[in-house]
Length: 161
Image (cartoon, rainbow, N blue to C red):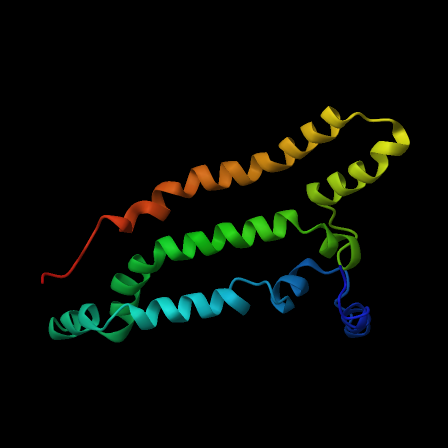
Protein backbone atom coordinates (compact mmCIF):
# COMPACT_ATOMS: atom_id res chain seq x y z
CA UNK A 1 0.00 0.00 0.00
CA UNK A 2 1.04 3.62 -0.22
CA UNK A 3 3.20 4.09 2.87
CA UNK A 4 4.15 7.72 2.42
CA UNK A 5 0.63 9.14 2.63
CA UNK A 6 0.34 9.59 -1.12
CA UNK A 7 3.26 11.99 -1.43
CA UNK A 8 4.93 9.92 -4.14
CA UNK A 9 1.62 9.71 -6.02
CA UNK A 10 1.26 13.47 -5.90
CA UNK A 11 4.89 13.95 -6.93
CA UNK A 12 4.52 11.64 -9.94
CA UNK A 13 1.39 13.51 -11.02
CA UNK A 14 3.14 16.89 -10.71
CA UNK A 15 6.17 15.65 -12.66
CA UNK A 16 3.92 14.32 -15.40
CA UNK A 17 5.10 10.72 -15.02
CA UNK A 18 1.91 9.35 -13.47
CA UNK A 19 0.54 6.31 -15.33
CA UNK A 20 3.75 5.92 -17.34
CA UNK A 21 5.19 2.39 -17.22
CA UNK A 22 8.74 3.28 -18.32
CA UNK A 23 8.96 6.19 -15.90
CA UNK A 24 7.86 3.87 -13.11
CA UNK A 25 10.48 1.25 -14.03
CA UNK A 26 13.27 3.84 -14.08
CA UNK A 27 12.27 5.64 -10.88
CA UNK A 28 11.05 2.80 -8.68
CA UNK A 29 13.09 1.52 -5.78
CA UNK A 30 12.43 -2.06 -6.84
CA UNK A 31 14.34 -1.69 -10.08
CA UNK A 32 16.94 -4.39 -10.72
CA UNK A 33 19.82 -1.90 -10.46
CA UNK A 34 18.68 -0.24 -7.22
CA UNK A 35 17.96 -1.17 -3.62
CA UNK A 36 18.85 -4.56 -2.23
CA UNK A 37 19.76 -5.96 -5.66
CA UNK A 38 22.55 -3.41 -6.00
CA UNK A 39 23.97 -4.43 -2.62
CA UNK A 40 23.76 -8.13 -3.48
CA UNK A 41 25.66 -7.60 -6.74
CA UNK A 42 28.25 -5.37 -5.03
CA UNK A 43 28.88 -7.98 -2.34
CA UNK A 44 29.15 -10.75 -4.92
CA UNK A 45 31.76 -8.92 -7.00
CA UNK A 46 33.75 -7.84 -3.93
CA UNK A 47 33.87 -11.42 -2.67
CA UNK A 48 34.79 -12.89 -6.04
CA UNK A 49 38.50 -12.39 -5.58
CA UNK A 50 41.08 -10.94 -7.88
CA UNK A 51 42.70 -14.17 -9.06
CA UNK A 52 40.59 -14.41 -12.21
CA UNK A 53 41.26 -10.79 -13.16
CA UNK A 54 45.00 -11.07 -12.41
CA UNK A 55 45.30 -14.21 -14.54
CA UNK A 56 43.55 -12.50 -17.44
CA UNK A 57 45.69 -9.35 -17.08
CA UNK A 58 48.83 -11.47 -17.27
CA UNK A 59 47.47 -12.92 -20.51
CA UNK A 60 46.98 -9.37 -21.84
CA UNK A 61 43.21 -8.92 -21.44
CA UNK A 62 41.82 -5.40 -21.07
CA UNK A 63 39.52 -4.36 -18.22
CA UNK A 64 36.52 -4.50 -20.54
CA UNK A 65 37.43 -8.02 -21.69
CA UNK A 66 37.90 -9.17 -18.10
CA UNK A 67 34.51 -7.85 -17.12
CA UNK A 68 32.69 -9.11 -20.21
CA UNK A 69 34.31 -12.54 -20.63
CA UNK A 70 35.16 -13.53 -17.05
CA UNK A 71 33.19 -11.63 -14.42
CA UNK A 72 29.78 -11.48 -16.13
CA UNK A 73 29.69 -15.25 -16.90
CA UNK A 74 30.57 -15.94 -13.27
CA UNK A 75 27.78 -13.63 -12.11
CA UNK A 76 25.16 -14.90 -14.58
CA UNK A 77 23.44 -17.26 -12.08
CA UNK A 78 23.16 -14.44 -9.55
CA UNK A 79 21.83 -12.06 -12.18
CA UNK A 80 19.23 -14.63 -13.21
CA UNK A 81 18.18 -15.08 -9.56
CA UNK A 82 17.80 -11.31 -9.26
CA UNK A 83 15.80 -11.26 -12.49
CA UNK A 84 13.47 -13.99 -11.17
CA UNK A 85 13.04 -12.19 -7.83
CA UNK A 86 12.32 -8.89 -9.60
CA UNK A 87 9.81 -10.63 -11.86
CA UNK A 88 8.02 -12.23 -8.91
CA UNK A 89 7.94 -8.90 -7.08
CA UNK A 90 6.54 -7.05 -10.09
CA UNK A 91 4.10 -9.82 -10.97
CA UNK A 92 2.58 -10.02 -7.48
CA UNK A 93 2.50 -6.29 -6.79
CA UNK A 94 -1.02 -5.16 -7.50
CA UNK A 95 -0.67 -1.94 -5.47
CA UNK A 96 1.61 -0.29 -8.02
CA UNK A 97 -0.87 -0.98 -10.78
CA UNK A 98 -3.80 0.02 -8.60
CA UNK A 99 -2.34 3.40 -7.54
CA UNK A 100 0.37 4.43 -9.99
CA UNK A 101 -0.36 2.62 -13.27
CA UNK A 102 -4.14 2.28 -13.60
CA UNK A 103 -3.96 1.97 -17.42
CA UNK A 104 -1.58 -1.03 -17.15
CA UNK A 105 -3.63 -3.59 -15.25
CA UNK A 106 -1.90 -6.91 -14.66
CA UNK A 107 -3.22 -10.31 -13.70
CA UNK A 108 -2.44 -9.77 -10.00
CA UNK A 109 -4.66 -6.69 -9.98
CA UNK A 110 -7.39 -8.71 -11.64
CA UNK A 111 -7.00 -11.42 -9.01
CA UNK A 112 -7.14 -8.80 -6.26
CA UNK A 113 -10.41 -7.50 -7.68
CA UNK A 114 -11.71 -11.06 -8.13
CA UNK A 115 -10.89 -11.91 -4.51
CA UNK A 116 -12.67 -8.79 -3.24
CA UNK A 117 -15.73 -9.44 -5.42
CA UNK A 118 -15.93 -13.15 -4.57
CA UNK A 119 -18.14 -12.77 -1.48
CA UNK A 120 -20.43 -10.31 -3.28
CA UNK A 121 -20.89 -12.48 -6.37
CA UNK A 122 -21.07 -15.74 -4.42
CA UNK A 123 -17.91 -17.42 -5.70
CA UNK A 124 -16.85 -20.48 -3.75
CA UNK A 125 -13.46 -21.03 -2.14
CA UNK A 126 -12.33 -23.55 -4.81
CA UNK A 127 -13.07 -21.00 -7.52
CA UNK A 128 -10.98 -18.34 -5.77
CA UNK A 129 -8.13 -20.78 -5.11
CA UNK A 130 -8.12 -21.91 -8.74
CA UNK A 131 -7.61 -18.26 -9.66
CA UNK A 132 -4.57 -18.16 -7.42
CA UNK A 133 -3.18 -21.25 -9.18
CA UNK A 134 -3.57 -19.44 -12.50
CA UNK A 135 -1.66 -16.48 -11.03
CA UNK A 136 1.21 -18.80 -10.00
CA UNK A 137 1.67 -20.39 -13.44
CA UNK A 138 3.89 -17.62 -14.95
CA UNK A 139 6.13 -17.65 -11.88
CA UNK A 140 6.56 -21.43 -12.07
CA UNK A 141 7.31 -21.19 -15.80
CA UNK A 142 9.88 -18.44 -15.13
CA UNK A 143 11.62 -20.54 -12.50
CA UNK A 144 11.58 -23.76 -14.54
CA UNK A 145 13.04 -21.98 -17.56
CA UNK A 146 15.91 -20.52 -15.52
CA UNK A 147 16.74 -23.29 -13.04
CA UNK A 148 19.62 -24.73 -15.10
CA UNK A 149 21.26 -21.30 -15.37
CA UNK A 150 20.87 -20.74 -11.63
CA UNK A 151 22.53 -24.06 -10.76
CA UNK A 152 25.18 -23.91 -13.52
CA UNK A 153 28.12 -22.48 -11.56
CA UNK A 154 27.51 -24.54 -8.45
CA UNK A 155 29.71 -27.35 -9.81
CA UNK A 156 32.28 -25.43 -11.83
CA UNK A 157 35.54 -24.09 -10.51
CA UNK A 158 38.18 -22.16 -12.36
CA UNK A 159 41.25 -21.94 -10.11
CA UNK A 160 43.80 -24.58 -9.22
CA UNK A 161 44.83 -24.74 -5.61
